[in-house]
Image (cartoon, rainbow, N blue to C red; front, side):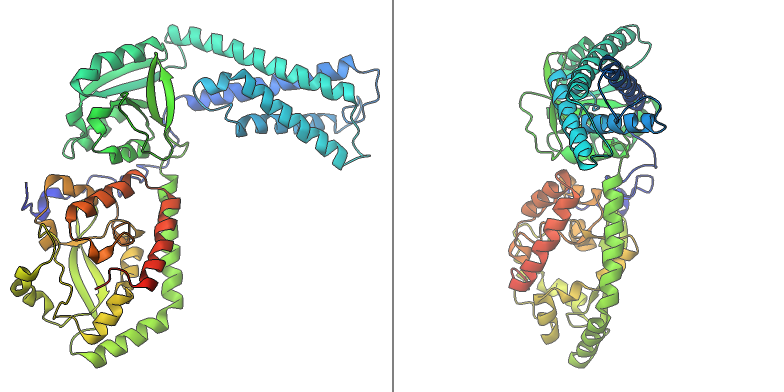
Length: 482
């Protein structure tokens, strides 16, 4: 499986990064229509609750909603907005059974009423409210919203059974043993229309893009994947989310390794659900913005350091200041990586003579602890990773990110086995889990691949920030640098 040429894994038609959105659009499906329906119904029912409370206690003085006041409706809508906001914060508008969690609805509206009471006291004596109004509106709000949700649920279930509204287009990707069990449980829900099925092979690197295009053509909004079909390639879930498709994993052996995974019961089976955000790829867009801003700011303020390093390199040894090397980046595309030169000018020619001294176990990476090609200044630069600073220009060019798997030379990639190409699914980075977990002390490339896979599967903006902070600590402590 080794000795792959660079040309065999260049994908020009794929998205920029498996986490990147395919286009700027909302999550797929009719979820937004159901959401709008619930919000309008809640506003109407809450307005009715307040008016009924006002009507039944009209014999009491109630300045806050007194008839004849020009701002009466504004005050009512402000109170209702607090109630709806509380329902939203508690997840009562999320898809699934949480929309009909009546106990949670009661808790949310109780909290909202406490907030309304606090506002009334805060603005007293401009606003006054009686105990009877507060209790009546609280009880009527809970009653109206719960009854309303119950009726909406009954209507939606009927429309779903008639295939008229509220159904989601689903697709099943299975391992042979799980196919019938999955389809049976999905059909029990009555809210899914299965548009097709495919074996696990459709997730292979060569077939993945065609599968995603097929799902888009079928308007699939949710995909069900058996654990055996995806257990060694959980990173593929980022692709589905970039296309605005939610993912459900089914198997009792599945382990929740994804940061936002939650359990969902569908047709009597437990699924691990990876909910798709409203705007797919927003986290990745924030990541790229952080990359560009971070690289720009650091280049601006560290310009004197660049000048100083360039001068000492020139004084130390003959040769250029910068070292350019072809590295393999996203989707196997080669690019020129920039570094400050830390070796003799003829270092690449001498590497063939030093291959027998390679200290890595499998020979994929080339590492020598006391490499004779490194210059005196080069040792200092490498110890504090200062030689990596020019790669900020690669970040600005969109070839790299601040955090990601390290891009490797052609010589190393030519020795890859098939499962090693996972590194090319995301933008390469200046630093990553490899760098904060041992750097050059890791001599087994399989450990590097394991760290890369952990990063890709569990990626988040928080994880990137954690790696950046650990990178500074590793550099200061000079761990694994040579």
